[in-house]
Length: 66
Image (cartoon, rainbow, N blue to C red; front, side, top):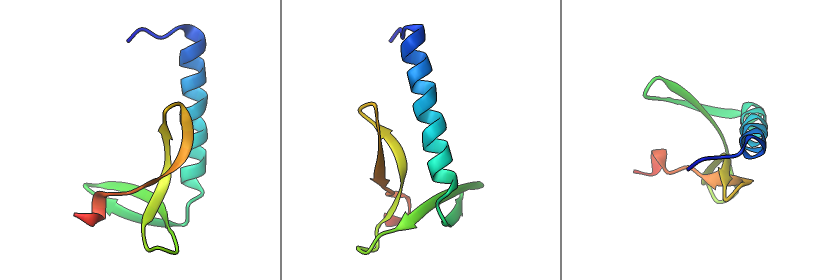
């Protein structure tokens, strides 16, 4: 899908904000040589910041639930 320059700039800002928020998360785990940062909620589920439908949201991690 072709994106306009303003759409690409908005996407970049969202990615930068996501990365900043994820960097502030306290817990981490190394999976496949990559450090993943997350927080564990009261329900025991691990969450991280992700972009869904053009918005930043806390997303439940499925990596360790397999």
